[in-house]
Length: 230
View 1 (spheres, helix red, strand yellow):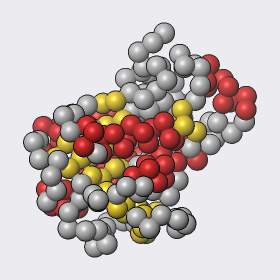
View 2 (tube, helix red, strand yellow; view 1 turned 90 degrees about the vertical axis):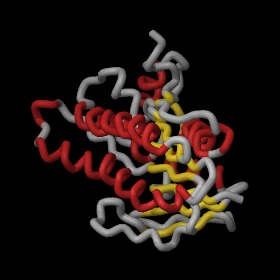
View 3 (cartoon, rainbow, N blue to C red; view 1 turned 30 degrees about the horizontal axis):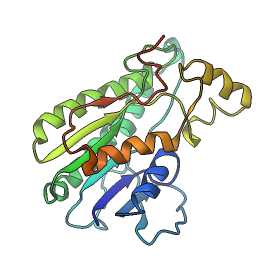
């Protein structure tokens, strides 16, 4: 049984990933506000706010086989109406939070064989969308971080990134809160449907585990075909 750390495991993609991993592995998940309940003896939850200056990860074991950073935000605004500080606050959550957690966990990852780090980008980085300048800027930094760390940490630790399109999660509720909005977003994708948290979790589990032992430095577009098909 391997040890995995899911940062942001209380809902959405993080919850789906933690649940799937805990069927066969030991999973340590974090939450920021409300502690989730779990029926799995292999899944434990711990309070952690990635925006805090000091992060206590003393609950983790000495060896980690993989970590996945799930906290995120979808701040969609016209560029002319954005306060520059909005970019800074988004960067703190989506990029600096990931950096701090990786640095905290690096010694534990080095203690494992073929450890893995999984980060999240968005389809909007490579496919320009209106009102996405905040999230695209932060997630563009994540894609650059993925490739730089993959080079620096090889061959001991693999680093990959998933770039989803819109998915049915609490984070996207404002965009998908009516059947009409869901259908309109589904029609924008070649597969004519909106992704689910489980769709993304399936890819995340693949990248975290030894199923992807020969994969590093990659950006995986799990997006219903939006990034490549017209």
